[in-house]
Structure formats: structure tokens, C-alpha cells
Image (cartoon, rainbow, N blue to C red):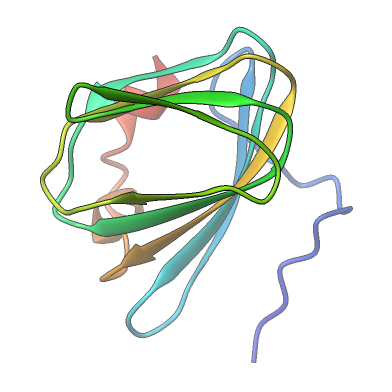
Length: 115
């Protein structure tokens, strides 16, 4: 068993306005992202299915040219190999679940989050 504690201060800083914590299971990766107002995750795609759950704030998701404003309690599904991006309209917290695991992150191939 593993426990990913929200309150602990060991958030990974990916950029000026983006912070992440994550853990990997056998078949899924779960990530918590703090996206501060004005932060942008640039358009990208990956082979992983993604489900994003907004816990706090407001986010503008663009998924395959469709735009969604997501608020607390909203869930966004992003199919594999689909171009998507997100912009934080407010300081936000989102939980992302990926399947299969984000082996690209394990290899350090997450530059799109760090630029």
C-alpha cells in the first residue's frame, strides 16, 4: 500500500506555476497537480488514457479542439493519443488518473510540463 499525502510539502515544481505529486501502481498512475492561475500545460498527446477530476478552482481544457470549462467536481476524460491542453483560470487542484502507468514520466520524458 502507498499513501500520497496532499498536505506534505514535497511538491515537485515543474515550472513557475505548476506543481505535481504522483504515484504509480501496476496499471495506473495517479497525480495531483497544483495549477496556479495563468499556468498553461501546452498542447500534447500521449498513449495513456486520462481522467482529470477538478477538486478546486476553474480550468479550461481543450481536448481535440473542444473547449470545456471545468469546476470542482467535474470530470474530464481524455482518450489515448488525443491532443489536449489546459489553462488555469484560477488557482486549481486537479487529480489525474492515467492508464497504463506513465512510464514516460519514469524515463524523465515530461518536458511539455516543464517548459
